[in-house]
Length: 175
Image 1 (cartoon, rainbow, N blue to C red):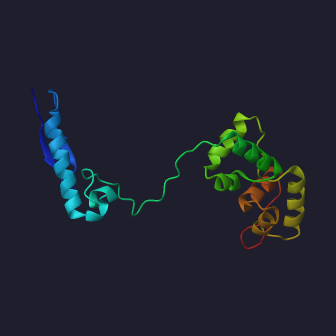
Image 2 (image 1 turned 90 degrees about the vertical axis):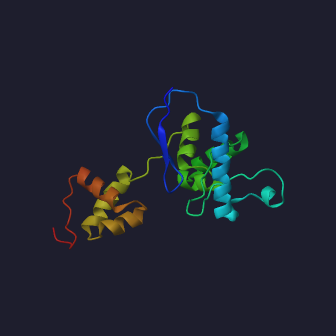
Image 3 (image 1 turned 60 degrees about the vertical axis):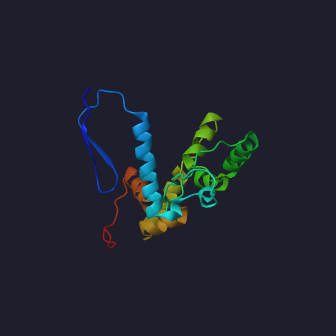
């Protein structure tokens, strides 16, 4: 029956120095946890829930979320929402817009579209748009201006120009 020598850090973390081979004493662990909870409540009374303030149940610790972003919990969409989502996507809405509209992540939107066999739109430049981008670039437009014209990133324009073998200018407009 070996028990390690444990230490508690300044922040209340329990560090174990060794291996425990006997079964932990549940009563002792419960007492230690209750004691720690009481100490934390005494140090920060704002972390109590409403029932403790009114003398209801025993104190419970609530997580401190002062510096954390609000998590977006995964949720499922009902069949009506999925049908509307598919209609909106086919009508031209982006996965980002749909994610904001339905309160889910864009990857969830993509997964739903894949599940229902809806082909994903490829963002970027079509072959016709690439031809037009080359023409505008040769007229002296910057990559940023061409990208803004087609609502794509300038790097996308640069990549399409390179794929077509177009020689690009440096940042000062020199060939």
